[in-house]
Length: 226
Ligand code: ATP
Image (cartoon, rainbow, N blue to C red; front, side):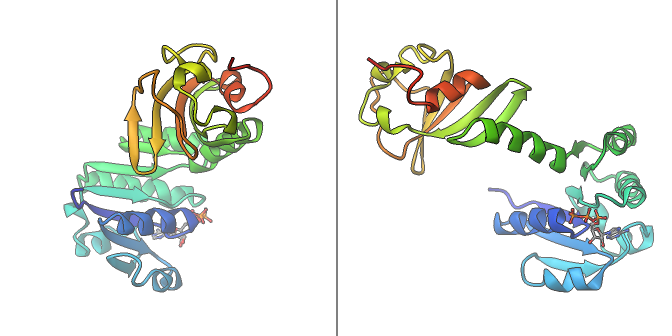
């Protein structure tokens, strides 16, 4: 993967996770926080960690921020700082500024100042948790609409050693009313699998469909596979 230069501003829980994950993925990460203790805690886990007030344009210029391809404004509850820093980064002509928003109003403001992407980790996590609670057995869920999504589920025991056809996935969209997009088998991904493909234990099924139909795949009793 291409190494990208990313600056992450605001090293709370969210910013720290973004910064360290990007660094582990092999990217060059400059992490900035005005609190020197937060910066010290991150030493060795990112490329550079610097204590600076990111609302200070001179401080950002001294750090050569304008050369970065990506910037993540991870400041959340300090709305004023989040907006000021985002404006500064756009005025320094950083092409990809991603800003975290903790409220709708903050998000709308960030959109208006032409931030490239606004993310809502708290509300996304809340939505995900609500879906996870009512879709037990589902390992990962991505909402497409409030009632439709893409899920990763561990192959139910009753379907192990059966072909897709016999499992109810014949013609890919069959008995369950969902679409089987792919099977993840260890490090391999079998896209658009053939209906004669056998399922084996520990396979992960990646399926798209209405929530209640997805849960039918997980729930053993609702549908017979005979
Ligand atoms: P999290 O939920 O990610 O833990 P939080 O909502 O508790 O964060 P925020 O107010 O969003 O806290 O602040 C996140 C971090 O951003 C803090 O570590 C704070 O020191 C830092 N920060 C806030 N303003 C600035 C600024 N102007 N320059 C640099 N860092 C800042």
